[in-house]
Length: 240
Image (cartoon, rainbow, N blue to C red; front, side, top):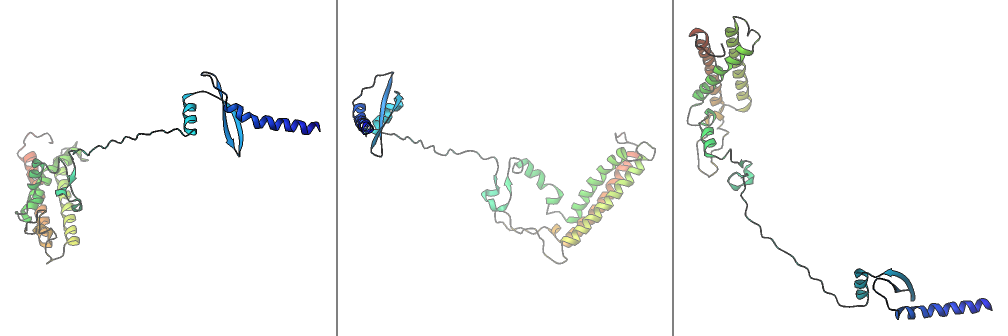
């Protein structure tokens, strides 16, 4: 009997607690009692007053709130591109850079023997061979195994001539493997702007053979001329 009376008193206290808590007033700086509904029963707890809790209480009470979303759109500003596709076409596979597209570099490259299509392949090979043969003597004289002997000049010149012969053989092998006799030039017959041009004769079997022969003759001539200047005319060069 006593147990039943205690349980009924506790139930009445629990039922009356939410109403008492709802009517309770909170004091700033102190604690307030928050109530919530959980399966139809009131749950209570202590929580310190704060601006966040006040906002949460207002939102829970259904007070209207406004949210403002600001978006700033920034327009694309035109920027200067240093490297671009050639003629604006990325499918060409080449790029325009300040080095490759400058007028000075274009003028220099267009005057190299390999790009002077108006000159015959034989003369182009002679020009390339003369430059290589002439400048190959110095390194062999100064860095060869006989550099400290009286035969340094002759040994270096013979070594440079041997290298010219090896390079000429390699050029001949490349031409045989890359070009077939009687076929048209492999170089394109149209420029990037659509202008027709004659194919480069160097890109044929006959033209490459002439270039290789010219390189052989020009290379040996360059070696001979360097030897004459250094050891026959006895000019005061550093590589002696």
